[in-house]
Amino acid sequence: MKRTARLLAMLFSAATAALAHGAEVQVAVAANFAGPMQQIAEAFARDTGHKAVLATGATGKFYAQIAHGAPFDVLLAADEETPARLEQEKLAVPGSRFTYATGQLVLWSAKEGVVDGAGRVLQGGNFAHLAIANPKTAPYGAAAVETLAKLKLYDRLQPKLVQGENISQAHQFVATGSAELGFVALSQVSRDGKFTSGSGWIVPAFMHRPIRQDAVLLVKGAANPAARALLAYLRSDTARGIIHSFGYAL
Figure 1: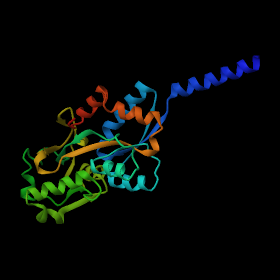
Figure 2: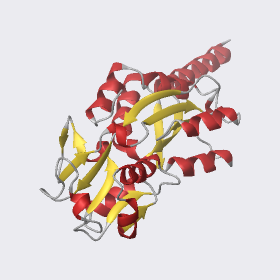
Figure 3: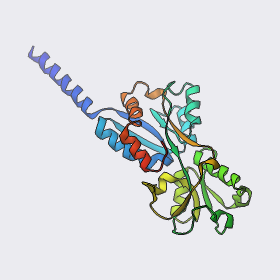
Figure 4: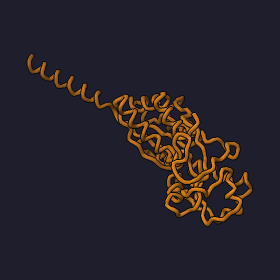
C-alpha cells in the first residue's frame, strides 16, 4: 500500500509539474510580425503557462517547409492566400483560419527628412537603391511592386531595386545604409503611431491589395492544447493591444 501511495504521489507530482510548465507550440511567424509576436509570446507564457517557440521568415518559404513536413503547429502568415491554400491541401485544420492583423506598407529611410509625407522622393529618383522584399514570396514585397506600378514608376525604378529575402532583410538594407530607401512594414519602424527613427510615408491602402494576415492551425498542431490556446490568445485584448501598438489594423 505504501509503495502504491508513493507511486501515485510521484505521478501526481509529475502531472502537476507538467501542467505548471504548460506545453510548447512551434510557431512559424511572418517576418514583419516578429516584433509584436515576441511580446505576445511573453504575455502568452505569463498568462497561460504555455511556451511559444518562434521561427520567423518569409511566408512563401514557410509554405514550402510545411508542405515538406516541417514540424510547425501554427502559421502566422503575412497574407491570407497561404493559410487558405494549406487548408485546401489538408495541411491545416478546416475552420481554424482567421485574420489576426492587417499590415501597412511604408516607404522608409533611416535618415530624418529624406522621405516626405507624400512619397514624392520616389518621383525625384535621387537615390541609388530602393529595397523591397522578394515579391514572389513576401506579400509586403508584392504590395511594394503594386504601389510602384500604381505610381507608374516601376519601369523607371526597377534598375534601382534591391530585393531582400523577406521584409526583415529589406528593412536591414535600409537600416544599415545599403539602400537609401525601402518599402518595409510599418510595424518595423513605428510604435504607438510614431516613427521610432528616420522618416517615412505610409502608403495609402488603395495603392495595393489589402495585406490581410491570417493565422491557421496546422495539422501537426491539431492535438496540441498550446497551439489552440495561442490562436485563442491572439484574439485577446492583451494581444490585440500589442498588435495595434505596432501599427497594424485589427
